[in-house]
Image 1 (cartoon, rainbow, N blue to C red):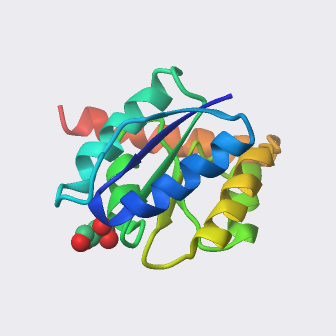
Image 2: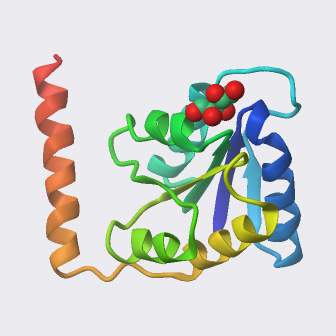
Length: 152
Ligand code: RB5
């Protein structure tokens, strides 16, 4: 399993904690920036990580900004990305089981490092349940396709 990681400046410290945590578990990852706490724009990193996930270079993505909101909204603009903003472990397994989320978004100003790492572990170990949930995912894809052609 390979994870694509990204954050803006506000999420940078939490992303570092998560990278240490993944390293301690020998989980392979690649950091797509940002690489400092200098001010930057979260959509840039959401797009880089989203691209890795839709192209299947990485199985999952983890994105961090101040709230997790802007970076998840941005990632969800990419067709095929289902980014879930989680601040609790229930949502972290439910978004995999029911929504087949492929990106986990976190807010550095919302969750501490201990909870964030538990959320990461829960997200990465949960599995999509398929069945009726697949039908709903297919409808999300239908929405993407309908609105893609409407914008052409
Ligand atoms: C940056 O100050 C902040 O707006 C950003 O990290 C994020 O919280 C946006 O949703």
